[in-house]
Amino acid sequence: MASKKYSKRQKINPAPQFPLLVVLVDTGSKVFAVLYRDESGEHEVEAPLLITATGPWIDEVNVQYRLPHNYRINKVSGIHIVINRALVPDCMFLQTNNRRIFFMIPWYEGTTIIGTTERMENCSCDEVKLQEEDINYLLNCANHYLKEPISRDDICGTFLGIRPLVIDKNDETDATSMSRDYKIDVIRKGETKLIHVYGGKLTTCLSMAEKVAALV
Ligand SMILES: Cc1cc2nc3c(=O)[nH]c(=O)nc-3n(C[C@H](O)[C@H](O)[C@H](O)COP(=O)(O)OP(=O)(O)OC[C@H]3O[C@@H](n4cnc5c(N)ncnc54)[C@H](O)[C@@H]3O)c2cc1C
Image (cartoon, rainbow, N blue to C red; front, side):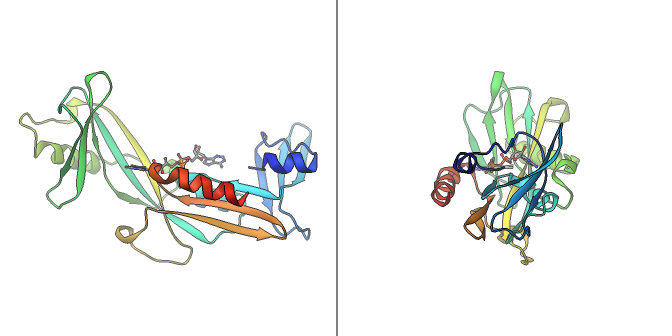
């Protein structure tokens, strides 16, 4: 996480390829520092620029490295199922009975993907699991439109992602009104910065990257 720019400016080698143990904020000095361990032991190195861009893991990373922050995220999982044959000639975005959107998209080697779902997750990212209920939901959505119904036997793959939906640290907002936008959270110490990137979408990642670059 320590920046290349800083290591050049200070002419030090912070060896960032070694796992960090903790980020030191209250060091009494005017810069952040990081503590890392290599074969020769534990080392402390100044790190005037730190950037975290760890998607849905960001809250866990903040706790693990004791990083100060002003936002947190709600984790909302979304799954896709892969069907073993072609179901649609082109990408189809369709509406469910309760007016949500789902899609069927031609995928690799003649397969089809169907997605997606929204489920609030309260566990850590690595503990999030695929739910039967979500698979059945997507099968039912598709079968509402398909002449020949599909079943679990037709599923040849599944994948799951977690959306990091950003909220204010003290906000109790519910999932439906949470923003899909991103926030750049800058914590300053003297002339140094810790920059957290929260939330966002593929469609906004370039503007987000430009804003972060401007802060560096
Ligand atoms: C179901 C779903 C549907 C989506 N649909 C759309 C859409 O239609 N349109 C759209 O624009 N966007 C969509 N998105 C959002 C898009 O996928 C994300 O915005 C994008 O993937 C986020 O990229 P990222 O690099 O910020 O986070 P990620 O891709 O999640 O990367 C975070 C990285 O941090 C790493 N990491 C975690 N912990 C640590 C650690 N301790 N140290 C070092 N590294 C760590 C992880 O390994 C990972 O590589 C969707 C997301 C999901 C989940």
